[in-house]
Length: 541
Image 1 (tube, rainbow, N blue to C red):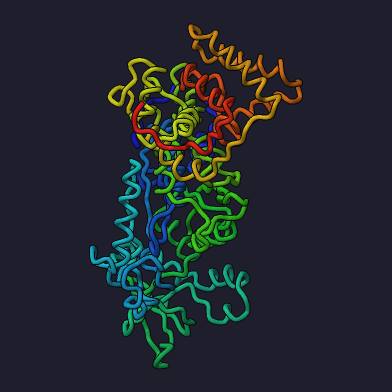
Image 2 (cartoon, helix red, strand yellow; image 1 turned 90 degrees about the vertical axis):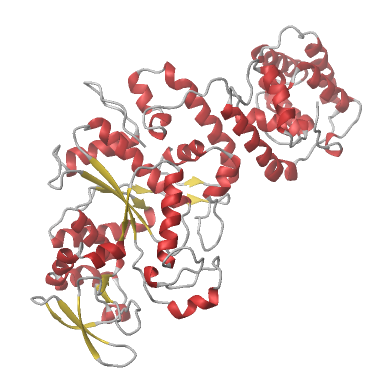
């Protein structure tokens, strides 16, 4: 993402990325460029598995704060490090890789020392790092990739590791009270890499030499004492100590993390201060929930993957989901997708009409680095879903027949977003709407109302405006139902005509589907036809 906009002379936006950026500018940086010459934003990744939706969320949210910061302080250079903890030892062989049995001998070794089971890169860690970079690149995120293995082995962390050794006892005093009795007895911030087996060892340190920069441990297999440097990749740190050391070594200014890491952020911040650094500004975001309100877990498989979302909706809708209320737990499930798409389309439509402050409070400013695309004429995703549903079709040409009539001049060539939304709507219909369709026949009272609706529609052939059609549906409802039952009238239309519990504004749907077509649909119902028994896909109109 780029930073194309210069700030106005006075500007106090309320959007959360600007609030975060202002706090960073005023509290941690005190309005000055850091000594390193740039402001550093960081996001971390554990490459023992493939990138997931949380990886995207942290990357895109951090980018939003970075863009807001650039707008507030364009004279300050910024960088974003996507840091991979690829020197971690492999604890468990993943289930989704080929040749799992062949990976077992490499348990405990750094991810970048294990052969790539996919046969495409020099190591398993390099393979997953490549997947991470391709993943971030596909969303247009601007970042610098950083490898823990390279930082440790190249010497970039050497000075900071010597500081950890110099403050060994102080770090123990911070960490040990947070551990159980058994773990306290064996804990050391340093994890030596065994020169004999290549494994990352979690062993007690029995001696250390700060002047030389070495530690001594006992080989757990042979019982021999081994002296090893803490520098040059011969050791890595336990992850909480590693996080604090990294903040100190790189002078990280901003990093966000999930609610489950609150205690770790606090502990790592104390370690960073002991080493002589200042912890970064941190935003704690809430975790995602599934449709039952349970925390999403990769091991449980109750989440929604990025590729799942992108099958049913364009990428900016996912970015909008990440933008909204990061400090509030949100349900991340398939049924939120249509709403996110339409909220995105509405925000795009409003943007050109807003003043400068409102534009910067509009989510699409943050999603598109201040320059949202001009989409032209669009149709709401909800309407397209219901059109696909009532047409019972998987053929985009059928849907385009109605769309081009509803919005003359609209075609795949002039409205590429509509073309994408039609494809997404068909996929969503096939996977989620069709299996759950439940039509019903109307009651006697509802039949009378449908007959009046039919008559009213026939008298409106020259008034196809959605507002007039909506008013007609409403007036028919008032005639046949009490004020308290009006909601039931609209729900009945959804159940009888669309086979679902909820639906769009009926006026907008009728305008898109067509008056004659809607009259025909009502006629079929009045003739006693159960629409659920006639869901045969049509390929032509």
